[in-house]
Length: 400
Image (cartoon, rainbow, N blue to C red):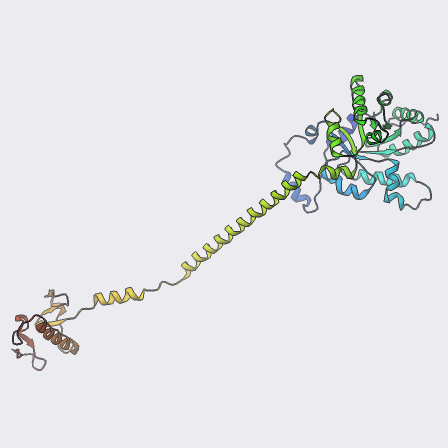
């Protein structure tokens, strides 16, 4: 097989890829600008690194459709992207290419588009050919663009294994694809492949027990002490994904359909609906309380701004309480309607200043008092025996 000069493309170990991911990925939300994001994150940089929380779990989005990338890669679920020739055939990017024949440049453009996502640590892209030389050459063209993040997938055939061995020797990272039996996983580990990729769903299509076969591959790799990872592809349901995880599988390539299945649990949907309804009720209560507080504040402000007004009834009571009927009984002596005498000389007034109503009211009171006490018409009060004559100020006997 033709061999080119050795490429210096790294050691091809998983540690190199994990170091690329240790720098962290930036999840961007359209509604949050960079300055606001930095402000929100300034107090949480001391939290544990994402890599330590993830453990050994790696999920790859098995798709060559850029619209699916745009939807699923920003979720942060995925370590990278995997593709195969069947997915490339469905890709709109390749279908609309102007090349008459399949072009590596078109494929490389697609790989570059995937690597632009900060959450993407690896892109697995297929190499093909009729012999090991062609597979190797195509693999080198793909890997040299980013040898740490591009993993070349080659088929688990005689020519494919030969090419994969040469690629690993030249510093490329490889995935052995189309694995259906534990002994094939052993061959992949023997050449130092980074990934061994059993095709889970197609085992069942062929009448095999895919779960059992994958479990045997896991045991084989683990017992041999190999650092090759079992990358389970063609998983067709979220249930299969969880069952495989229960036996120690931690690396999967899943389609967009399985992604949807992972979020389709009916109880979760109902839970989220109730959560949103509860939040809406809380918000409504808070708005009502806020409006009530605003009304109370406005009422207080209105009370403080209103002028103080006297109560008409209390004013009348006050005037009535202070109003008295004065009757002159002797020089220098006055009496109030309450019957108490007041000898204060300051209260003595002249007859010119005295209103005539005083005499009329006093005479009327005297006459009604005489009628009510049952005394004879000729009897008079000793206090009223003398009055002041308005003509000459002389005292004279009262003539009834």
